[in-house]
Length: 65
Image 1 (cartoon, rainbow, N blue to C red):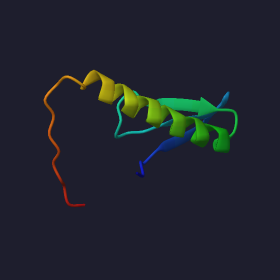
Image 2: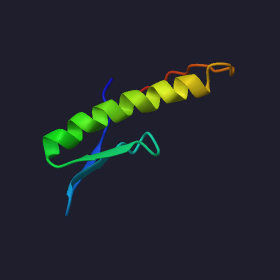
Image 3: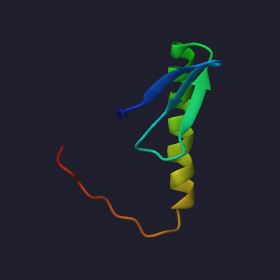
Image 4: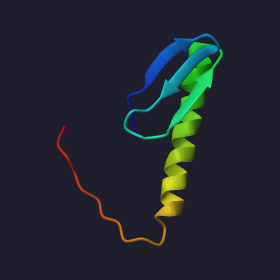
């Protein structure tokens, strides 16, 4: 899957987050490191959502883009 990310340079390096996944953010000393770190953060975020919804009724919907 592809996710839109926001990347901003800070005094400490780069901050990066996923607007479509509230609370999913990371950082890195370089732009490349920040992008690699957000990939890990996205995986962890999605795994956590699956765990939290494991025993809940869920459905899938398709939305044309």
